[in-house]
Image (cartoon, rainbow, N blue to C red; front, top):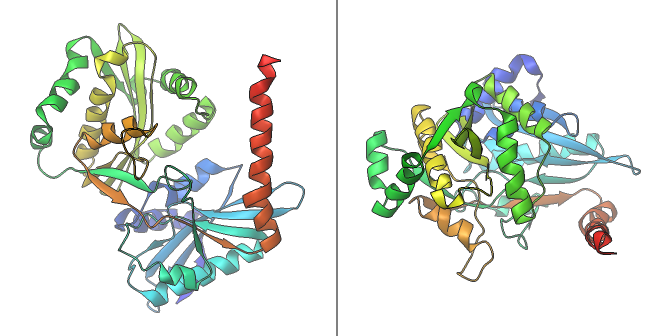
Length: 355
């Protein structure tokens, strides 16, 4: 086996491998690395067998840490393997990843492959000095570890018929009461951001800038991998979302709704628009993209869990987020001291308006 760093001339082959893999994810595409610039510097590498066939890929994002002039190496939803039972392939890929990260001054490597539990032995990760992280986080890490995936087998009518009677009623309610959807060129990131920002304010969640989402849309639209969909009532945007599709997969990644018309079940109708688009794109399943794990009715995020569950998908838990420290001192600072400093700043910032 050999590992090669590639450039844009091999982007299509790189993305095709990701698209064809059962464990491929949009966050491992060449295109996603372009989106993350300039805050992150992407490095794409392929692992080839003796016949020069690609058997693993990894899009590694490097972020420079101020003052100490070191980096962190993050492989979102990767690496992507052709065969998760091939221990030799996994060992070789992780060793290559470690070498590439060390050469670029990384203090840690973070990976979170889109591999469901039970489909890869995590012992091989531990043998390569990786340890599980994110267990104290509701969603299990930087990327959600838990999700619901809805099978899209059959026709559009058959998919709709599999929903419960109550779900079908809620999906129809908005459109029967003036909710109209517009997609891509018929809507705008500005209207999307109107809905998203109000959701962020309502739930005390930080949202990225509209310029970031415009960049996401513009880059993914070139390869027809994204749906921008906005729902309007009386020409006022009330709900909007960005949905990704790659190969036979689709993900409901970003979405938000305004404070008006929330009782119109607009999110139910919106998700049906997304599901129909994913089905037309040839997706085998639709990923609702993230729920908290181990919830009960008293959990503050139980509403999100039960809402996504109500569409009838299968619960999926991935193997999780794994770190490999390359400098014990700097890793401790990153994992322990820096979060405490950020928490202190956040508390001071939140108190400021009251003084």
